[in-house]
Image (cartoon, rainbow, N blue to C red):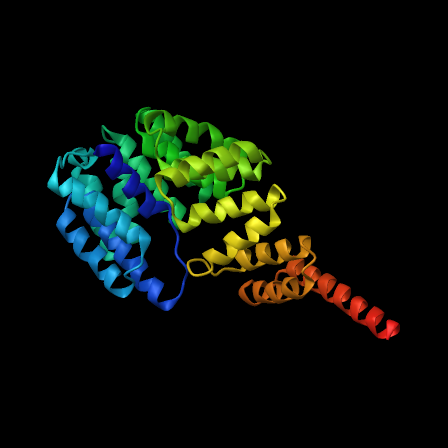
Length: 309
């Protein structure tokens, strides 16, 4: 039960959400729910999860966290939060109030106390929220150094390294985390993504399949579709990307769909999907180049048809 709670709490801190109106509200509610989890007020956390689900009943993260907290409330409530120092609790109260200076000050103070591993862990989350990745990484490393069996610090480090593009470096902490939680779908997905980025397709596929067996969610299916594309299974990849559009509508998914179309010589749909990808991207020169490339192919084909006529 302790491991389940740690995993769920980590997911709140590491997941990011799109900055649009409704999601800004759910961001705030997730943040408040996580703060209540920290101080052990699970019932209040549940209230805010319910508010999220009223806004978006299909919010998978809220559903998953609610399931986990339900188990904790109905069963063994003991977790690492029983050992949170008053200093850390005060830091979380300031976080809830939006007083970042006080939050930071109390977290720094808490790192000088016994059981500093938890203070360093929250300090890492603080630095990450400020996009100071190197300080965040140092804090997570200090957390695991202060207590080498505190698994969440390894997972947090691995996710951070993945976001920094340090894929090889991410494998060591994620493997350490998996020694404590071998059936953690999030950790397996993180490992699969690092392996995918390193070109280790067969290993990425294996860990992606393991993650899907545990939690068959859209994000992991998206990873699966990317692996299918790299393997050259363009028709299968395109079919899966298309199915995921109801859950994922980003520039990247349309880009991959266009690349599948291009590989299948379906240039009309490739042009359409590159156009959609461009509309959702922020001035991506690569997409513009590919769009113009496909457009040129179609124009050449049209010219050839006219000449034949």
